[in-house]
Image 1 (cartoon, helix red, strand yellow):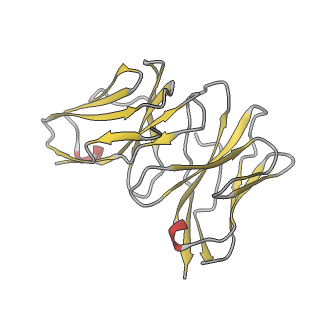
Image 2: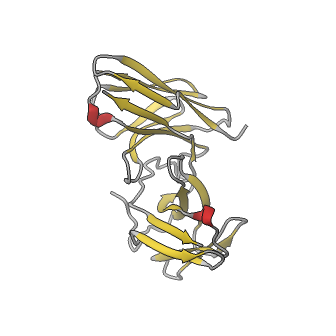
Length: 112
Length: 112
């Protein structure tokens, strides 16, 4: 299995909702990442987990809450989001935590 | 901050070679050059990486200058499906730096 699977593919939520994005990989990779991508912009790093521990938080607002329950799973919990948080959220994994990344297809989030 | 600079866009005729340049003048001795591409609304896809020697795989060739301050990704026979944004990234290979940052990338248009 060489895939990073993200669910859901599309999510629409209101500003008062609580929702979660899910990412799964079964390649035994040590590092997992969340990126946010706005239209016509490059992916922007949000969080990095290494061996299930949060190693990087790029000053992301607390309305985004990551969680790594085990080495294969990465969640991003969303609460009280703003319309400007609407974007494509990309999950990636890396065998060595370097530039070799395997990306999922992304979850497209719309906040109303 | 991204450590690479790339032209914002390039055109290429179908069937011709596409040569995408990248400047990474502050690259460190332990940093590799990685290339990714992102087709519209999909997750970025790894293409190739290298340290100082030229590299080739089934997708592309990577030419790195002797001083390692710049590189060129070559798609030998571009097809319409190669229309995408191409990202050049520098990152350590083995030290697990984790902070893989994307620059603005080059938007390649392959025209029939």
